[in-house]
Image (cartoon, rainbow, N blue to C red; front, side):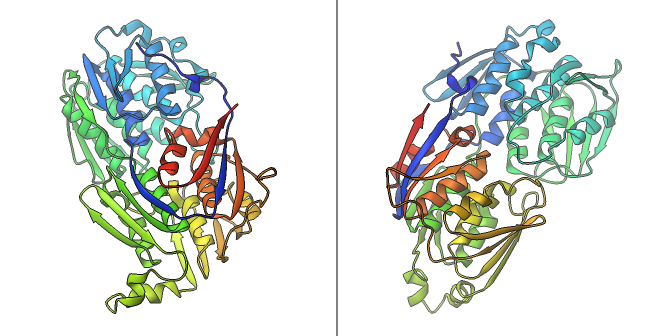
Length: 463
């Protein structure tokens, strides 16, 4: 049976980092948090036992499991795998708003997937509004309008979302999303897989996590096609069964470690990756002077922080790398997949802060994703915010405190911004202490373990 960890309690965490050294070594990437959250919620739709392989014990996942357990679902961890048994699930409990704790639902954005899954199986659902990092306005309007397009009656009252499917099944239903929202696409899929209706979602999100959810549901007996394209078609089925499944590797954590290696220098190999999921970033790092080798599920990055890497200096076949390295202006715009991910713009800003020339990153998805900027300025970076962009002029090096007894204090305000501060502290000469680091563990099971394996001097302190 599932035993709750301290993730459900308020626990402050800080990271103490002595930076300035290169990173070298090999680490394995965990399964994707953003893929696992909707997959775990999707088990509500199944009957029987589902085994999810290689699941990281991060706070977002444990909080979602707390919701499942409160609904009568049996959950246990075993040897890094997650066992979810829905064979004794009680319909009445799933339809009771009080069984989905508003306190826990408010901790994670992923709790919204419970709505689609409960509605899909039991035709009615009442759940609290979700939470998550304060990175800007993330309304669920697209979720609710999509449900209405599918004939669902939606009422919002007293902090709860009350939904009910029509009594008679529609032969077909169509939804046109105004924006290719990942969460809305996944929620509409969860709502539609059971029943007799043929559903088509236009302008659907194309992210790998959406594809992974559909692959999982198809492994459970669903009939979904078109995932990975902008039009997804779902033919409803009578029931879904359990299965054994391994979610995709975490492409955001992969990207973060690639950026860390490029920023600090050294040679790092990442295993259990899908390079294609980070093709956009890899292209930019290669143009910035990184030597990246892809071998199956392995990505090896070599980056020399002083000038160009040796292979670029000595190899006449790589003149483009020399040209880009001298380039004074780099411009990046975040956008839905396969565009540049919003979840790694803060990390890349750290890398650009240590490169020559001026760069601009424009954030097109979340308006409050620049809270890390004042913290980077403490390290000596030349970075400023203008409208919805950050303008970065590279400096030779970042500097923290030279006194271990009085380290430079940095404060994380969200998951991805917190990871960016870790990268900056690793690259900076001196000692930094990152407060509110508990945000980081919403997406990393043990970031300090991974970085120590690469030779970093980093210590986690829980308070």
